[in-house]
Length: 363
Image (cartoon, rainbow, N blue to C red):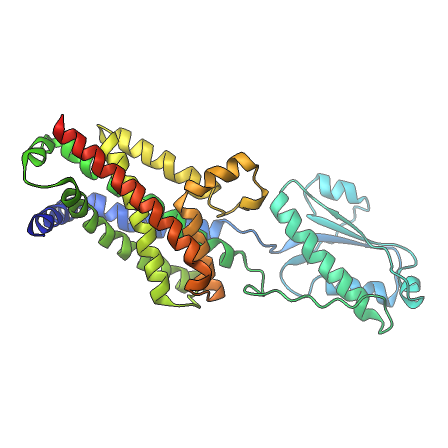
């Protein structure tokens, strides 16, 4: 225990002396959260919509007004009477065409036809806009006359406002932490190799496990500080608060960071230079955490071969915990498979690192 504490204090002093690296590790996560949080939006906000009302009836005017009750859409007033031209020029994100006979069809108890044209050049926004407009049009038709054919009662759980921040921010927390933890740890043992102090550590009484524990503890503490700062910023800046158990979220974060630190230690044991370790760390964390974790793209929509790769991405399991605890107040009974997967990943990576270090001492 004394030897582990000595390694821990040595690593803490090194981190404290390297003020520039410490500042980067503390500043970059908050910078990424603010940049992605404000720049990336998956919901519809002030999308220009053109309405072509060919019925000119009370019912069609009611439908037209209902489209612009909130800031999701703004009405586009244009002299151009060709819907395709408005979409081609990018002036309108969507066009709603109310045909002749709309009110007559409602009065007759039928289902009136409304044409909706959406610019699909941005697939995510187009899908969201189509869903919003369909809901508004259907609700307006159902409420226009009590004897109408539609009884439409939508209800959205966990994110009633369909705010993309509540979907994105938990993913950003996982994305930022995996990069910070893996990159910082991956440089620790490599630094010893480059400075020529690794030989002294190898001939010392330290066991591989003691060295790994001593190297891991400082970065675990630093990563927990970063995690607390990111979670606090997400609540203050974007209103994404923790609805569930804080203790359970802390346990999930510790387990996830342990998995990330294990991955960083494994990279550090393999690489011989800090440049190579940094490159491997970024490649093995940046793309998988963004693409394969379910952060933006649903895992269910991926091909089977790609879906199989996601099982070795720890951010996948932590993201389920984050969204489950922060948005749905889930407990351990619902999240234990994610805890188990992160535990297995941590054991494998830390164990592999210990084996590699033990072999380096023997050679």
